[in-house]
Image (cartoon, rainbow, N blue to C red):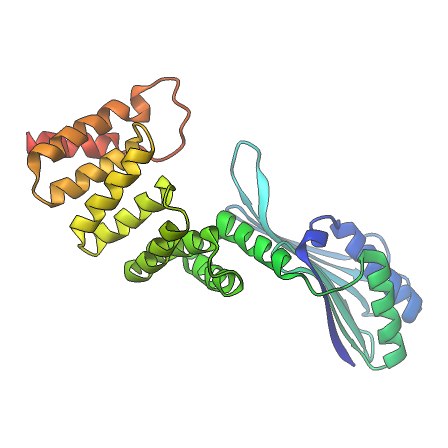
Length: 302
């Protein structure tokens, strides 16, 4: 009898991999009357740059036991932390009895069952829910919050494609949410789909017209599709909302340069040089600096 039980990711983040392995071992001991040893009989590790995979099998009697698979990808920050991970424990070798318990940073706790005995299936699910919490459908707000978290942390993956997938789901839930429209627009821009990016970034500006961040990104997409007058108007508004923002000033210079307004372009390239983070020893901004690009173009114009 195949069944799948899921518990949301907020709970998954608080469950240790050792707990999931212990749960599967307990199920085998209870329903298959088989004891699984502590140590693995077989271990395989495969490491790539920032990607780690561990696989091993815990053998019971004969060719029966648990296959453990762990995958995680880390990001290098001041404090190295796991970005994406999945851990699964899967039974093997038991006739008419198979379960797989997965912990996923993206999908939550997932228990998959294929057990012939319906009563055993029912009891395993009850044991699972008692141990890890009642399996319930997430509220709309919970789903939305987790999607926004995904967009914020992983929206740039696959050149924005992942962000597009998540963003489209987010705006179905709350079409008028600023962050949903903003991150979806950013993801389309990363994917070089600027016409679609403009649609969602324009919507975001209607929701919050005082966000210089969304105005700046909207101006960049206008620029990329050749709508220079719109790009200039929007980035000037962005500039008025934040004082001496090096990135915005540099892109204003780019737009004016493209419009053949040489005098104004030179003025703002110089301003971009003055406000560049490299010019301020104590500046702690982490955004990209366009110092070299501004220096090169200014030299060509003058």
